[in-house]
Image 1 (tube, rainbow, N blue to C red):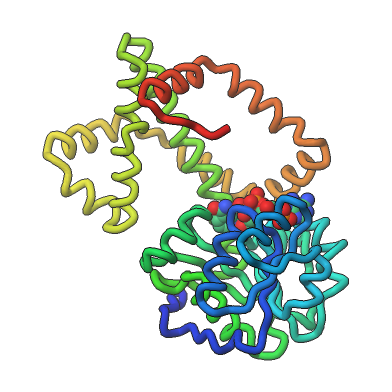
Image 2: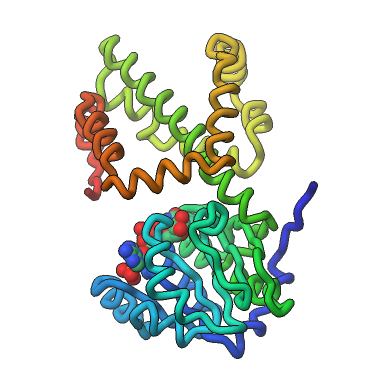
Length: 332
Ligand SMILES: NC(=O)c1ccc[n+]([C@@H]2O[C@H](COP(=O)([O-])OP(=O)(O)OC[C@H]3O[C@@H](n4cnc5c(N)ncnc54)[C@H](OP(=O)(O)O)[C@@H]3O)[C@@H](O)[C@H]2O)c1
């Protein structure tokens, strides 16, 4: 089934004229969202749980309030905090202050999909999920390019949820490159699936390739630069996002085309498809969500151990050497 793709003209900012938008959480995504909305002429306040958030929001010229105060004041509350802290904040400081006719908008469908947050029936519930890293939300708004986003309405209490969501999407610059309608379930599943398949495979591919080159005596900085630090790979990915993988491969020199396509067969492993299906099944059944909840209850014990094991690998010392020798400064 094909879903609707909303364009710039589908959003009408006047649907926010009478409304105050609460940006709840002034972090990676909250800040660009708030700045974009203000630049679009939308009235915005910030809900924050921290002194840092309050200081940053105030420095940017916003009025900042405790979470409950912001939720009480705003008619549209855009919840922009990490999934794992959102549930407690929702129970304590958001849910008790929701009013009939107000709207909750999430940027991740995770908690609603897996049943950790169940908004009351008298509020509208939407999803506005940019498919870009948070910094890009501001950069591509300022450049006028826009970026793809997912849009969804899970609850439409009074039949007005879509126009308000589309106005919000337009306000943050999310309709310029298309806003794709999706269900909450699909967004949550797809997001986790990409994180749990493509990301670890890319990670494994790159680290294995670096290891082979270093083993065979290639200089550290050149090995890392060739594989990803030069930016050639990220440029390839950017072009792939524009024109698709097939067209991009067809535009490569023939040596590249032949080398890539002929060796592709060598790396073919039919277990991969099965492992991906298993991963998707864990996500769709809620098993991963339950595992992640348990992990949080356990104080992130396994995540800390996984990081400890990762950090003990020599490859990161070599990566640091390569970054130093290329004159890159890396923030901690
Ligand atoms: N980052 C991205 O590229 C991106 C892209 C698309 C969607 N998303 C989604 O957007 C949401 C926010 O992501 P993010 O990267 O912006 O998160 P983040 O920067 O890690 O955190 C956002 C804000 O949440 C608030 N917060 C943190 N701990 C809290 C707690 N215990 N109680 C209440 N508030 C707390 C803080 O704001 P205050 O200090 O102001 O309270 C923090 O700055 C997530 O659901 C994520 O999945 C992120």
